[in-house]
Length: 272
Length: 272
Picture 1 (cartoon, rainbow over the protein chains, first blue to last red):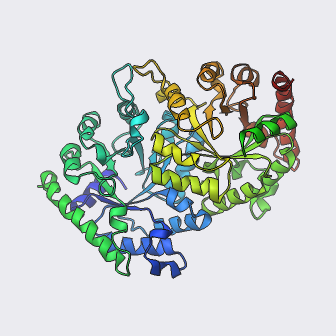
Picture 2: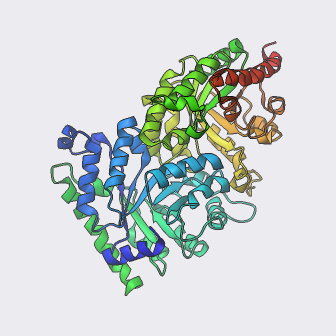
Picture 3: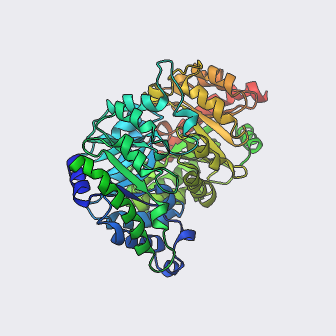
C-alpha cells in the first residue's frame, strides 16, 4: 500500500487506529479454546468486528513464535484474513547484516505479503536497506520506544549534541523516503513527539503505548500530527481483551470505536 | 549448558568453533533437493560430519523464516538433531518491550530449548532481562557487529566519552553475569577486541565474520582470548558451502578441521 492510499483510507474511515493482534491463549475467551486454531479464530472475529473503523492491523511476531509451528500457522492465516485494503504491519523488530536482513524482508514483505515490518536500527544501514527495496512496502524503524528501557541507550547524548534516537531519525531517513519508511515513537513520551516532528516533518509515525501503556491520544495528536495526518496509533490489549465472554469481539469494537470517535475530532484539523 | 560445561567441551574437543547453519535452497548440493526436507537433510549431514570438532551450532532464524512454515519445521528438526552436549545458539537478534521479549525467550529458550539466543540491545534493560531468567541459558547481546553498517550507530561517541557499543557492554553486563550473558563482537574489527576485553574481561564473546567476511583467527585470539578461552568463533558459509557434490559434508569437515587445528595451537596458551 502506498502513502496516498493510506491517507485516503484514514480520511474515508475517519480513523488512524492500528489494532495490535497480540493474542495469548491464557487471555482468550475460554469458549475459543475448543476451536481448531483458537488464536486465528480470535483474530478473525476481532478483524470482522473492527476492520471498518481501523486502518491497520499489527500482529507482533513474538506472540505467534511462542507457539512454535502452530503459532506460525496462526500468523499466516491471520495475515491472509486481513482485508487487502487494511494496512498490515508485522511487528517483528528484525535487523541483521545485509544478506540476512534480505531473507527477513523476503519472508515478511514478499512471501507473507505484509505491507510493513518494524526494524531495529542498531546494526546500521545495510541492516535496514533490504527492507526498502519492495514497491509500496515499508520499513518502520524503532526510534524512541515506549518501554522503560528506552532511556538506556536511545536517549544517550552524543558529542554532536544528538540523542541516539535523534541520530537514528536523521541518518536513516537518508536511506529511504517518507514513501517507504515510518518510525516508531512511543506515546508515553508525547512531548518528545514535537522534537521528533521537527526532524521528520513528513514521515508517518507508528505510536504504540496508547491505552494499556498509559499514553494519551490527545497529546499524541497535539505534538505528532502533520498536514497529512502522519500518525498510526496502535492499541492492542485495551481493544482485544475488552471482553472475555462470547461477545468479546463486540466489546473490542466498542473500545475501538471510542478511540475512532476521538480520532475523528482530531482529523477535522487535517481534512476540515 | 553452563559456563564450566562449555569450557570443558572446548578443552576436550580442542576447539572453540561454532558452525553457522544458514542454509539457502539455491546453494544446497542439488541432489538434496529431492529430499522431503532438503534443509534439514543438509544440516543433519553437516552436524554428523562436524559435531566432534565444533562446540556450538548457530542457525540464523532468518534463513528458516524465509521458507515460512516449512522453514520453521526445518529449524525445529535441526534443533532437535543437535546433540545435547553441543552448545546451541539461535541467531535471532530479537528484542522487544518486557512482556514481549518474554514471549521470545519462552519460544526459543524454553519451548525449542536452545542454549542461547542473540539479542539486539536498542530497547534497553527490560528488552534484555527476560532472556536472563532461565537456568543455564544465555543471552548473547549484539555489541560491535561485523557488517559495514556497524559504524552508523555502534561507534557513535557519547558526551561521556564512550562509543555506543562500549556503553552497551558496560550497562548490559550489570543486568546479568558472565554465566548467562555473552556478546557479539565482529572479527573484522579484531583490534577493537582488546578494547572490548578491558570492559568485559570474563565474558564469552561470539565472533562472527571469520572466513567469508574476512576476519583473521590469529588476530581474534591475540586480542580476544582470556584465561578461560572466552571465545566462540563462528564460521558459516566457509564451512557449510565448502562442497556442492555428494561429499559436501566431508568437504565441510575438512574446512572445519582447518580451523580446529589452528584453534588447537591457540588453546595451548590456555590449557597448556
